[in-house]
Amino acid sequence: MNDTQAVQLLRDMLGIESLSGAEGLHADFLTGQMIAFGYTKACVDEAGNAVGEMGDPAAAVTIVLLGHQDTVPGRIAVRMEDGRLFGRGAVDAKGPLAAFTAAVARIGPRAGVRFVVIGATEEEAASSKGARHIRDRFLAEGIPSACLIGEPSGWERVTLGYKGRLLADLHVQGPCGHSAGNRLGVNEQAVHWWQGVIGYTKNYNQEREGPFRQLLPSLRSMASGSDGLSEWADLRVGLRLPPEADIPGLERELTGLAQGVSAGPAVCSLGFSGQERAWVADKNSPLVRSLLAGIRREGGRPGYLLKTGTSDMNVVAPAWNCPIAAYGPGDSSLDHTPEAIVIESRSRGWTRIGGGGGDLERRPGWRGGAGDSNSLLPRNSISDL
Image (cartoon, rainbow, N blue to C red; front, side):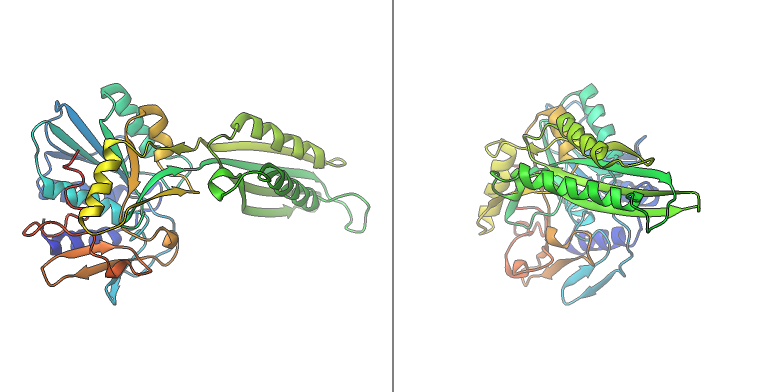
């Protein structure tokens, strides 16, 4: 795969809308490209994942490169402007998935090693349908030797951990009453519960430094209505969890807060979903060491990231407990924005897919060795394993 083909692959991927739960066209396209670029086999699995394999299934070493093909809503015209390729998913996370696909195509078959590149479904939804299917597949087949998650980190950074997650849905319903009356309406009760959540998290975080170690709440959505006889209010709250968070205990606390604000004839109910525990990977694993070595060879100064969001790492890492990290081109601050990724051509014939902002476009990363063009990963970082 040459530079032009690698960039065109990403551009074509960006041109196919693939919202969570509707990734089928994209999966068909990507698996077709994998076969065209020399993968041993490629298919769309039962969960809708695009799965490509390079190497013998019986190889002693299996390296999983787990990206995701779904995106959040919001159409962005695919276009090149000032060396930046715009499109929904350019950063999060078709850029990293294209990098994985191109890197393995360039590495080609290696004796004793099988590479499995996966474009998972529904990563942007709390279901993580694709990653759960892949998790269970390799629990049955055998734990991978290593797993690299495809998420933007910037070319000099390796992501070691992600926070956990808990979603809480409050529903308050009761009979209508006059706004001049002396009882709380359902909207007020819902707001009081949210204020209680804020108070609880502030108290929890008092002696915890840094956002990765704190309990971080967000108000995801709110709605209310009435049919003239009864009224209702709904809130969805997301909580980003630190590694030591007790999820059942937190659910009990939030339930107690809901019971505390319930007033009069109105009834509060609370449901929970999307539970994922935080995960922090071992920074001394062979996988991480190989990534750091590749970055240094390109003249970079590698560093680590701990992210306050969640990813498919939270799904597979606790089950597999193998060397794992997240890595990929792009500036993660552009996730879910009018995102763009840098495509820069070099005089030596190298093309780079780098970050979407800052000075990344001036850095020497995302290139391959002389004559090998662009591997889209630090040189030889995968084959070093």
